[in-house]
Amino acid sequence: MKLKLYVINQIAGILAGVKINRMEDKAAKSALMQDYLDLRKVLKPAQEDKDEIVRKFQEDWKEEFFIVERLINANQPVIGHEGYIKAKSDAERAIQDLFGKEVEVALTAVPFDALDRVCDDITLEQVAFLQDNGIVL
Image 1: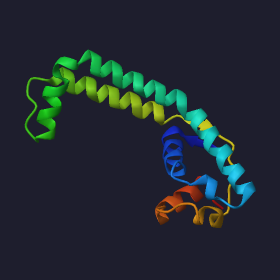
Image 2 (image 1 turned 90 degrees about the vertical axis):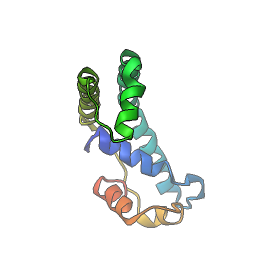
Image 3 (image 1 turned 135 degrees about the vertical axis):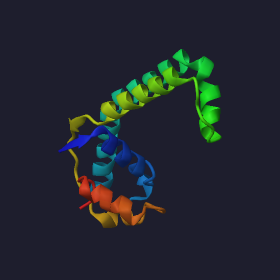
Image 4 (image 1 turned 45 degrees about the horizontal axis):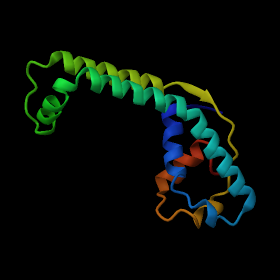
């Protein structure tokens, strides 16, 4: 199945909250654990690239970073910092492009009832999202 990296990131975030050791269905437990590990492996290079983009941006703009971010957080006009704003926009676009790439992943869907008892705060929207993306039957 082909999925965009931002979707894989969301799936991994949801699965990170699964209390896998409480799962009774051994086949579902094994499949879910393997899927999670595979998703993290695919996601790791993109996460590292994102961290590098952020680090480089913050390093290049450290003089203006706190000044501009303080103005933005206070809902004040940001005047005279056009270069910073453009560089921030470019960095955000680069990260969006990075996570917009599709990759092939092999997933094994598990029945919902295998997840039901091991996810204390999973929402209906998250279950639907996992189902739409081949994690839950």
